[in-house]
Length: 173
Image (cartoon, rainbow, N blue to C red):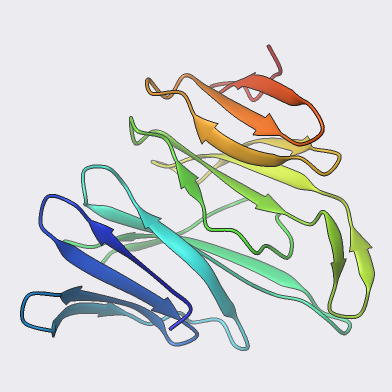
């Protein structure tokens, strides 16, 4: 298990590892549901629940050698349906950040040397949570996404300086 987090209202817990996501009832220690991750040699970098508890966004990546990949999925916990997210990303070591309104999520990648010491520039992807489409790809110069505003309309990327972005267009404000 590489990461774990709780979904508040039901008290369920999700664990994330190389073999997938498992949802547990921590009161009795019993598994409730399981979603295997189909990518080989992947490393789950964590995942987060949507505020309504219906979906989990999982980011997994691998780097080093000639092949690096990033694999992002949105898993509907109730139906078991899985959506693979469109758009390019790269080696990541952060879980996705989901807007409180459940409309968008952010994923950061790069920003250093990975595996075979390949320097990968820091970038953040803004995604539509309903369709999986990548809305924007933002070069960050080493900054990382901090969070969405409470209403989900803007988000903040911080590093040496902080910039606020529009969550619909991905443009700096």
